[in-house]
Image 1 (spheres, rainbow, N blue to C red):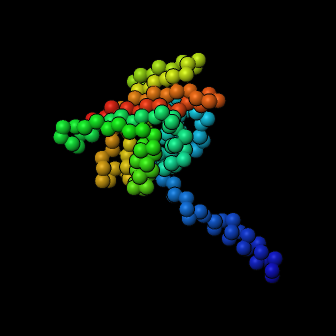
Image 2: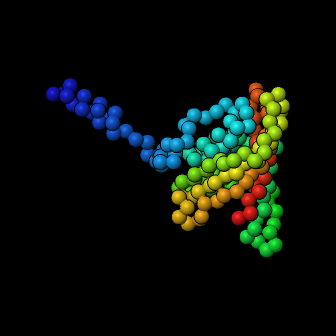
Image 3: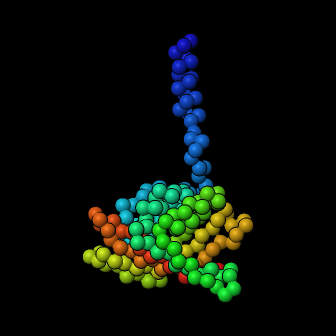
Length: 170
């Protein structure tokens, strides 16, 4: 009888385990590669960027940004519109707040409009379209826009984002 209990407990433990601290996966999460890249190209950085947003992973996101990082955008909700400029520390805090506030974030990269990248270079630039949906778009419509990223190759050939300019006008 005790052997049966042990086997039963084993199966309950094996199939009944779940991590209450892990966020539940959505259908769109399953479409995102669960494999992180080593950031050996600017495209790899954008792959990890999407992963960080999808899984709301602040640690992965922090590894994307160079210590010299600068975010540039325009706040169109003020009259007249005002410039937004901040560095790495403010961006990490802002992004962490975004990750905490929304239950789901779906980021899709679209067409590459400009790409200056050579494998022998230490600098690169990509202008790309994006689509960001927050909580399924129920309260905030899906955001569509363009972003200009500058990258630099750092130690061990790892690429980092040095500048992100949000070119959207929403």
